Image (cartoon, rainbow, N blue to C red; front, side):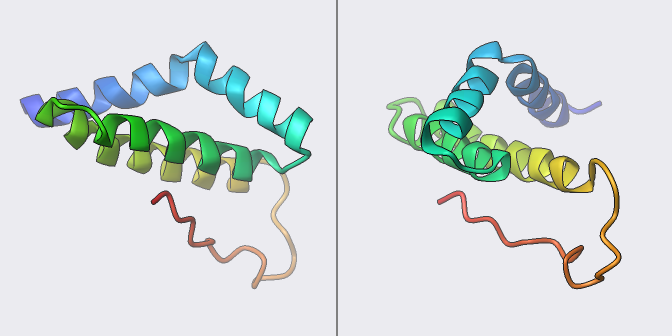
Length: 98
């Protein structure tokens, strides 16, 4: 596996295992009374903004990885459980992480 692909996989795994990230998502759901999808969007947006504000170019570049991971998480959240009989409901939403 190329170094870039390996780094991307490391970022994805770190985010998936980050208890703090998931705790913040749960907290947003409970306190703001929002859906888990929106909580993930907001948390990803916040993390990406922090990385973009870094003085290190490497960290700034990781913001795109965080957004990509957010899209993957959302796709999996949406496909978890029963499939809706309404085909329009199953169309992928366009989440904005910017």
